[in-house]
Image (cartoon, rainbow, N blue to C red; front, side, top):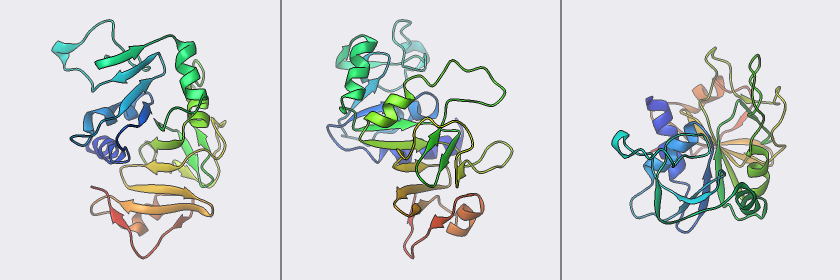
Amino acid sequence: MSESRERIAKRIAKFFTDGQLVNLGIGLPTLVANYLPEGLEIDFHGENGVIGLGASPFEDQVDKDIYNAGVQPATVLPGASCFDSAMSFSVIRGGHVDITVLGALEVDQEGSLANWIVPGKMVPGMGGAMDLVSGANTVIIAMEHCTKNGDSKVLKKCTLPLTAYRQVNYIVTELCVLKVVHDGLQLLETAPGITPEYVQSKTEAPLIISSEIGCME
């Protein structure tokens, strides 16, 4: 796993508080379960029908019958509950998910999100993402700051078809933590050795930069 992905996952894990129900999306977000602060008690929800997911299993612990929503081997903790997709989405749509963590192709300064169409590739659809970003109380985006071509993924306006309009609360990348506020994107933290000016140079959307910026730990 790359250092940047590890940094993102570790930082997002610090958003959680005891007793929350958290959904982790496919890809990078699933890594967050491996970095929970010691003593923190939360429940992870899998949209494929489980509450009580644990960390990723070691190779010798893989159970062929236990997978997360991304069809990756998973673990379940004592007391976990399994149910069908109808019940799983009732949990989401009923507003019972405190936080959802999702990957993204684009996020814009209004908090809109595009994450289900990959240009030039066949994709099965948006899955549960539209329900999650609309139903969860807090939406956190976990993604690398730029594309492989070096283009910013934090934009003034999304160019791809939207998954959700103005639903994102936080964006965490390997460079920074951003909060979506009324006036745009507020820079809360930067990674060690990264300046606010550098973050802005890699970000299409204008950032709100205060005199006090924290450091991603």
